[in-house]
Image (cartoon, rainbow, N blue to C red):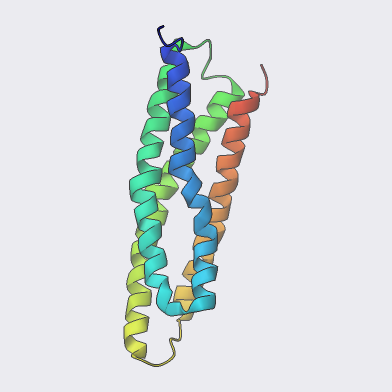
Length: 164
């Protein structure tokens, strides 16, 4: 018995799977920093390394898959780029891509380097994190929260398709 799934339906499956796999882990990033801070600032290099890995190996490839499958679905489906739910979601995907490449990845590289130096400077003593590091970490948390909200808005637009 042949599989009764169209290429369009399979594309939707791949699209949704890419969102779940690629961005699901990014929501856990919101608790990594606070948990590490409660345990010891010495765990912070691991947090930044893990965030870099998630963003490079999950979120970035997922963005490519989401865009490719979305373009395919636009070509095959009865949709218009002028529909608010399509153009709004596309704008959000572009914003998330820019933030990922231009902010999150470079920021984690910089923060990892900063905290590694501050830990090395402390030797075996208590680690005193610089105000610059703490400020950059807070900023990253705020931008991460905004990005998470944007992702949720994109999912809402894709599921509800307002205006149709």
